[in-house]
Image (cartoon, rainbow over all chains, first blue to last red; front, side, top):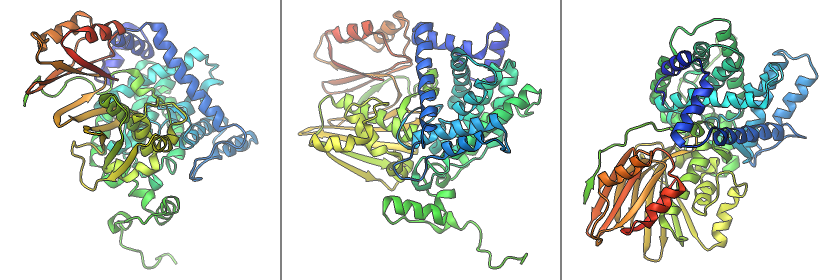
Amino acid sequence: MYDTIAELVTAAEDSGKPISELMLLQEMAKSHRTRAEIWDQMRKNYHVMKAAVEKGLTGDGVFSPTGLTGGEAVKMRNYRLRGNTLSGNDLLIAVESALATNEVNASLGIICATPTAGSSGTLPGVMFAIKDKLALTEDQMVQMLFCSSGFGMVIANNAMIAGAAGGCQAEVGSASGMAAAAAVEIAGGTPEQAAEAMAMAISNLLGLVCDPVAGLVEIPCVKRNAIGAVNALISADMALAGLTNKIPADDVIEAMRKVGKNLPASLRETGLGGLAATREGVRLKMKIFGQELEVKPEWVDDQPPVKANPFE
Amino acid sequence: MNQSGKGISMGHTFRSIFDIIGPVMVGPSSSHTAGALALGRAAAQLFEVKPKKVTIHYYESFADTHLGHGTDFAIIGGILGFAADDPLIPQSLEMAESQKITVKFIEEIGDSPVGHPNTATMVLERDKKKLSVTGSSIGGGSIILNKVDIDNFSMRLDAHLPVYFIHQNTLQYHLYSEAEWQNYFAFKGYPLNDIRIFREKDTEWVILYLDTLPTKEMIYEINELPFIEKAILIS
């Protein structure tokens, strides 16, 4: 097993094999299963991801039982198809695919956790954004999953992937880093560039808090996957253009671990801080669960109240 | 109580690429839904029979967000034996009720007894039979079984899955020693990460910390060993 990204990159360079292939070989050795069995399991995961994107974009879309989220992936697609967007077609395919997946997740539909359910839209967002552009075959889409698993495993073993342990940076941040690296590999970049892409993607989301409104995986989780996917795409492009992160990938993972450990509990998936502790966030929680909620003053009022606007 | 073993199990927490890409699951949260389901399933496997009463104690993030994350139906779904991607999981509480299983959820105020923000203690009861399992959900649907109490026989494990629970009959003439278990698995090409033996009076549990799932042939062979009362593989 690879303990660091540096080891993974060196092994890929020395063997001339892509990182996706190294992960497949590692799984074969660990699980005593054949290449075909492992490939088949990963292809099934890909089919689940594809089905979730399609489901979220069919008809009016899907809606969560609480009504907090749903239908916005479809809105996004309709907007994109009308043309005249600011971000352009490919980035918005990433956005709508990510939104669709997480809306399906919030509706208690079936998804593939990549690496978690809360961050399940980021990787498919990136994959479906570049699928047509690079004319990727199904095998190449599956290859991206193998590559991203290598980066994800090093992150998970050296830092964390649970929002309760390290905030959203550990979920969408990790997913974004994994997706950026996989996009670089499939676009023909080097293992070193894949590592740089991961380093940039995670650096960009470092410190992102996990503050789900009403403790649900809806607000802001669904849209954070859109940003995770777009962040991955631009990080991959920066790496392919030869830009570097300066801070090495393994150091970035270590930084994420430390930041995650230092986040207060209210910002680690307790639904008690950040957006969840805003007036509207608390109102939504009470509306959904119909119960009184203790809101400690320190969670809401980090700053003394501003009495007057000095610019008026 | 005697306890042998090498202390904390070494090795990587996440070992399979499918811990990272996967599981395929019903939303909305891998740690609060898929992980909770895995915890429930582990408890059910250890209890072996259908419980009449189930009490779930939640700690920290689990206590704060179990309602929103569907942790309740996931953990009960696991106890009822659902797969992680079964679309009926959200209806598990109604199913438990129709099966006359009393279910109770308790939000504990203090810190997790095992030091992880997503911790649950599951107490399963049926007449005089009682099991308590404390586990934590560490992300991406993966779990750790921290503490298991079977009818007041207490074991602190901190085990990642897969893990083999083997109950040995101490009245037998010869039991497998720690080294013999190690040798058996090494010979098969499935080296153990760790092994712990808990012994009290005539009860002995051997806990095997596995790296990957053993083959069907190995499971069959282990079940056929004469001194084994039961062998429960949790994966």
